[in-house]
Length: 159
Image (tube, rainbow, N blue to C red; front, side):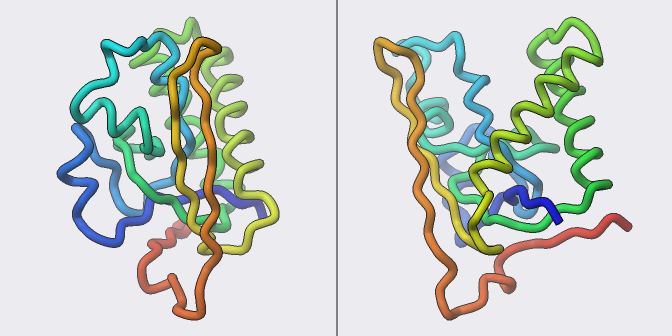
């Protein structure tokens, strides 16, 4: 079964630090493309937090600080791909559905690579910086501890 990551919250801090917080349990990607045309003047206030540490939730298209590796069914993967493609058309002007689907598949494949080799409930954090060469992302992995994160992670089904 393939893996992707879900937005995970441990407290309500994301509600205060992001202009548009992601919803607990929604599938997530890096979403760094949102900042492709940004410069230092764009990185202020709550937008700065989204840029610096936010994963993009697929559904709300808001941001969350942490994601957890989770198994995803092929049906869910197809649904997530279509949701992201629709967003790429509506919010970023992708020229058509085939182009948007291609870009969505690339973004999701990249996130799957980040999750690859990590057990379920491994937490991921992202840190972004803007430099002369563009956006640089670094990822931190936090292994699941003895306490089972199932009580915090929200898992869906294809039903």
